[in-house]
Amino acid sequence: MNSYRYLEPAALARVRNLKLVARSVVEGFVSGLHSSPFKGFSSEFSEHRNYVPGDNLRNLDWRVLARTDRYYVKEYEEETNLAAHILLDVSGSMGYGSGEVSKFEYGCYLAAMLSYLLIRQRDSVGLVLFDEAVRLRMPARSTTRHLNEMLRQLENCRTESRTQVAGIFHTLAESFKRRSLIIIISDLYDDPDAVLRALHHFRHKKHEVILYHVLDKAELELNFEQTVNLVDLESDERLQIDPAVLRGDYQRRVQEFIDTYRRACRRGRVDYLTTDTEVPYDLMLSAYLDKRAML
Image (tube, rainbow, N blue to C red):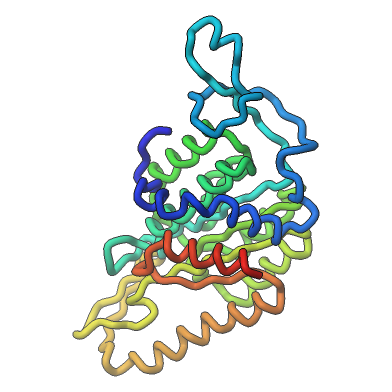
């Protein structure tokens, strides 16, 4: 595989052993649809790749071996029992970052890691980039070539527009015809009631949903020491504030915002996780998968 910014070798090394745990998570979410991922699906040849130890020898291309004395494995577009779709918010607000990475970059790292894990365990995964409209929609596939293209698209993407979370989700819920695992990565800066209705739309269509609510630490704590000028990255609206005066009320309102999603998602059987960009994404993901594996 080529080298990509959002697929870090060190992070991959830390989650490499989560393959079976990740599969048990997927099976737990889509019970009955994913119980036999290696049997009973049709396949269409897609490409060759170099053989690596552990690959099934039945997929070795013996004709290529006879001609070139090199080991190549046939890859297929698999109609697996699970299709996963990663929905990544690329609106302007996701571009904010008070630390080393922005919310958007954090989301890209998380999307890349999840895509890698899903394709490595032979599930298919698609990618949707959205703001006030769908900017990119890649169908769910399960090959290394598809993963490379997803990673390339993540590297080329930029944040710039307004948010329209709820409307996009309603449209996507109607468009996914097959029961799927929907993985959402967003700061959810839209009307919570509207977003929650859209999440219920996914559930009504029998999709399973994991929601990663990504926020910046400064957004959670308003931890500025002096008067600051705040700029809305989507509307360019500006506001000067004294953090010391507003901090207590602000933190209370942010916690209410988060609790609204947490309670409603629990009732609606949506897996909800909130994280800030200072928490290493691979450690957050590992802890989540370990927790799901024990349930």
